[in-house]
Amino acid sequence: MNKLFWAFRSYPLTPQPPLPQVERGRHEVIRLTLSPCGRGQGEGRGNVAAKVSLLKWQNLFWLIGLCVWSSVAQAADSVSERIAELTARVASYQAIGYYPEAKKQLDQAQALLTDRAAAIDQVRLLAAWGDWLLNSHQEDEAIKKLLEGVRQIDATPELQPQQLLKGQLLNNIGNAYMVQKRYSRADASYQQALQTVAGLDGRLLLEAEIHHNQARAAMRKREFARAASELDTAATLYRAVPDQKMRGFGLVSLGRIALDVRRADPAVNQHLVQAWQLLTAGGELARQSGDDRTLSYALGYQGQGYELDGRLGEAIQLTRQALFHAHAAQ
Image 1 (cartoon, rainbow, N blue to C red):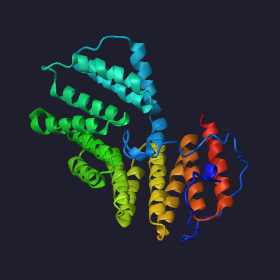
Image 2: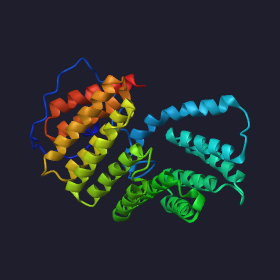
Image 3: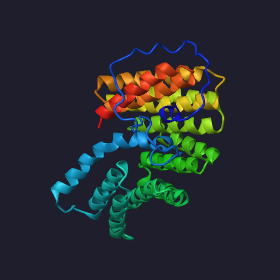
Image 4: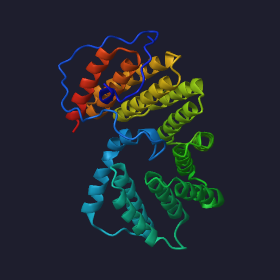
């Protein structure tokens, strides 16, 4: 049972309203080694620490960019364009877990950087280094790079319009602090990031992600009511994202955090209701868009919710359905 349900304690308290009955489908367990919940429980790595494996597949579209860069095979018109090309490759390789190859691209970009390089190129490269270092478990070095990027934006007049980039840097600084379990400092970085991007065009997805991260920080600080509120805010923002797959994926990732809040605060059944609502909404969006991968996560986490509620038979049914869709997504 532990292998099937990811080994956590159950609290058989029925939420209000109770979780619905699970319909038995024709889904079968394809391979028990598949896990709809992914691996890795660390905080903050990548864009959002606790969902590294959950996010990684979603960014596979970056592979298209890699193919384009490789097939075009023409020199960039300037050093800036070449650095932009290389840092785009860094993001692509990191999204699919190819960190050594990402490092090679970073080294090439660093070699192009001179004292006369454009200020924006220096900051973008610092951001790329910070992200790579964070993914490589070098949080102290990541924080140094990211803070240097923030300082350069603040100190350089021509970079003042780059406030969205500054917000991204501050968000990743918060992620690094989360890995180090410095939750108050992480929370402060997220707050600063939100203040930085307030009112900016193009902030919607980043703002949703920051609130998602704030919910994690609040949970770790045992501020459970605030964590639930941050999840509601993030959900509202995700629902406004134009891309349906991204909307579904965002809601499912929030549902996972809501389950974590429920585990940390088992006396409040509303956390389980919130998790169920988020997972149901995200799973339905995934079903409508044919996104089997996100649907498998939604069903797997719903199974965890039923296991927390002591309803193991229904949890097994959902786990089987999750494994079915995980196999279909391969």
